[in-house]
Image 1 (tube, rainbow, N blue to C red):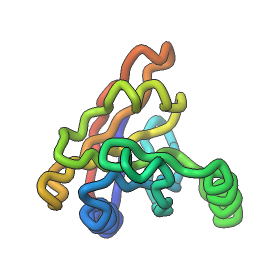
Image 2: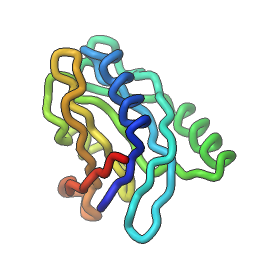
Image 3: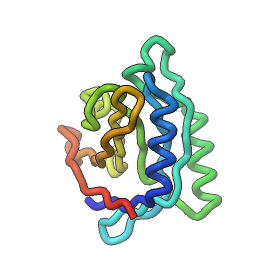
Image 4: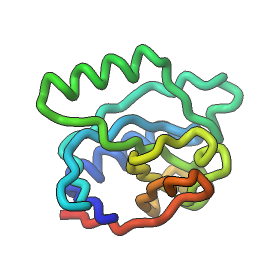
Length: 141
């Protein structure tokens, strides 16, 4: 899997993840998929609604956020193609919690934020049998 992401969107994600530190931050990726290549055209930040004392290692959103963002994406002629979030002071590698809550066919972009600085961004997709994530390549243009 190959993911194309504009540098301006990467900077926006990094800024959000650094501002969320020491907690996790996240949101949705909007765009399209063509011939196996995912193109991220925009992002939508979503507030972390997990219990405050757990936000340093968990991220959640309200179902109403999901529905609202799906409608907004449709209105703009885009699709919800994935989800992004941070791992504060941890590698940009999916956790077991991430795997258990992942959706098939979604792209997952994880940003490692070390000591309040975004340091690494990686892209993942859940295997069809849900056993693990497979890494992809991310092209920043």
